[in-house]
Each structure stands twice: as C-alpha cells, then as structure tokens.
Length: 328
Image (cartoon, rainbow, N blue to C red; front, side, top):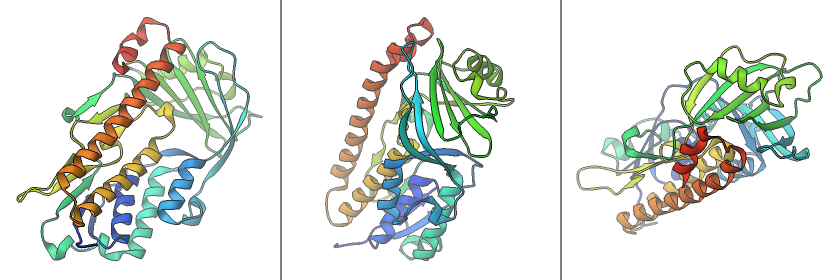
C-alpha cells in the first residue's frame, strides 16, 4: 500500500459500518458519523448472508454479538395460481436489523476507536465520503409499487419456524414468524395505498395465509419498494471536493421478494472499500468509479430481467401492467 485515504462515513447502517470496518482494517483513516437509530426493524437473514457477515466481520453468528434471534428452519411458497411448493429446508434467523447495526458499530469502536472519534487525517478534509443517503431526484426507479407491513399474533398451533409466501390477484404476501408468538406480514402491491392496514387485512383474507394468523394486523406501514438505482453512485475526488461512494439502498435497491437486500448492501460496502483502497495505491479514481457504477448497473439490469420474468406469471391483472413494463 502506497498511501492511506482519509474517509468520512456518513451514516451507521449495515453498509456504512461495514465499509468503515473494512477500511480501518486496511489502515485507512476513517471518521464515522452515526445517524439516529431508526427504531426496530425485523430482518430475515439466510445462510448465505450470515456466511457473508462471518467472512467480513469474523463473527460466528449474531448470537456472538449478544443479539436476540429467532431461528427459521423451512420455507413454503406459492407463486401465482400454481400449486403450493413443498416445505423445503431454508435455515435463517430473524433479528432486529437496527440492533445488528448498533452491535457492529460497538465492535468497530472496540477494535478501531479512532474510526468513531476525532476527524480523518487529523482534522483535514476527507478524500472520500461514503454514505447510503441520496436524493430521490437522482435515482432511476423501476415502477411505483409499495410494500405494506404489519405485525399480528400467530393462530394457536401454528409452526413458528416456517416462513411462507402466497399470492392473491393483486399482491404477493410473505409471513415471517418472529419467535414471540407473532409474525411480520408483508404484502407487495402495484401502487400507493391510502389505508394500508385496511388493504393489508383484505389481502390477508383473500390469501392462503389467513388461517395462520389470529387476526389481521391492526396497524400497518407502507414503504416504497420498487427497484431503484442511483444515476451516479460513484464520483471521483476533485481538488476541491471529496469523492463520493453510495452504498446500501442509497446506491441500489432490489424488490424485497429477492431476499438479498442485506447481502447486496454488504457487497456494496466491499466494493466501495476496494475502490478507495485501489485509489490509495495509485489506480485512477475515475476508472475505479466507472467500474463501481458499471457493476451496479449490471446487477440492476439482471434484477429487472428477473422481475420481468416472474411477475407476469403471478399477476395477469391490468393493475400490474405498469410495474411489469417498468421492469422491461
């Protein structure tokens, strides 16, 4: 390594904290500016994502961080009007994503205290800024679909170790047991909803998941969920401004159906680390930023192609035509 970079990490989500961890481990000067905790956020992590966390952070699993987790062992899915798929083994854990990010931040502070205290480069201006925050006007968004989400009690006698996916004419629904007698119910719909809790209840009643819950969620939130990609996720430093690398959902976001959001966020952190490290070693920052952008665009196109293939199989109704066209 011929040089060390001064890097500001603006945010403390999984992608930002992981980037700070990897950069500090390579000897770069890092200053992380945490953002406020966003509250409880149930997160489902499959085996591949857990393995990625292990390889990046050197932890055996979330339990090593003192996190409360709930283990899932199986998954059952019914996509479209076809028969339900058999119950298959799909080991995963459910945990609070906000707590996971906070515990990783604690681990960063314990191993690299300078990364969360003081200023990079002894108080000088950073050469790079890494963040997941981006402006909505700077993104490509493929559609206008929304995710409805709410929690409700499982019906008596229900297995709490199997995640389930089902479809109605208007939406797909996913049921994730949380381990405390309740479950997270999510529904993807093709556009905005004025009364999310009412619509979520109607979708549940029309689906095969209705008997799994004691009652429908009494409260629900609606979140934008269409795939999106930042137009310029990487910009090289200039003599007057630091370079900027967007990571996590600020750079690229997939449909929740893909189940790879956390792993994708971690991979953007790995790629951003590689860009900064290679630039410090003398590689052209402009070429590195072009490579970063190209990698994300390729992944985004591949995801849209998958959506364009899968959604027509489940949703022939006109309500979904806009979303399917947007993916094409």
